Image (cartoon, rainbow, N blue to C red; front, side, top):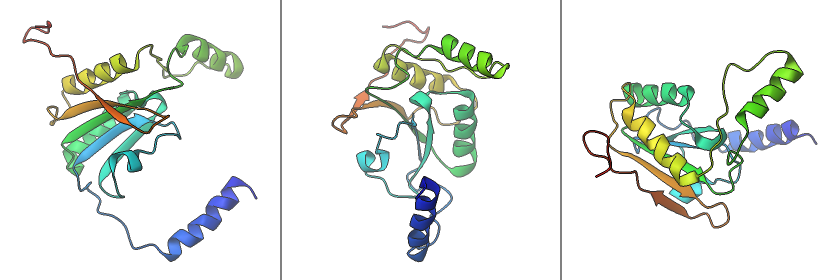
Length: 173
């Protein structure tokens, strides 16, 4: 049985017990930005049910232009006010070679990608950078309740990463 056939069979069982759609606006008024890694059980780790948060996932859980676009829609039209950025241990983006990957894709296809795939060297520093990027985004009306955390793929534990505190001129006190 192919995976698609498995999904179709599973969906038949799901539909039989389907209780209808969740509300369009997330009940907890939160957006979670996280990595696409299949090992992250965010619903379990955060105690979530369907319909409670918006969940934006991509490679590395990075704050890309697409994430900013989706988050602006989430906040302005769907009622979210808080953000949680979740990165994780053993991430494939740790030390990822963006230039090498892009060169490989261009060599194979004859066309360079129009996007980049930035890797990072320090998970906690990347969480802080993501939080800072969100707090500085002028398109987001709700920038005060933005938090970061690291999910440990071995234990499932979520550890908060505190943002660096800066003074009015952007310097550290």
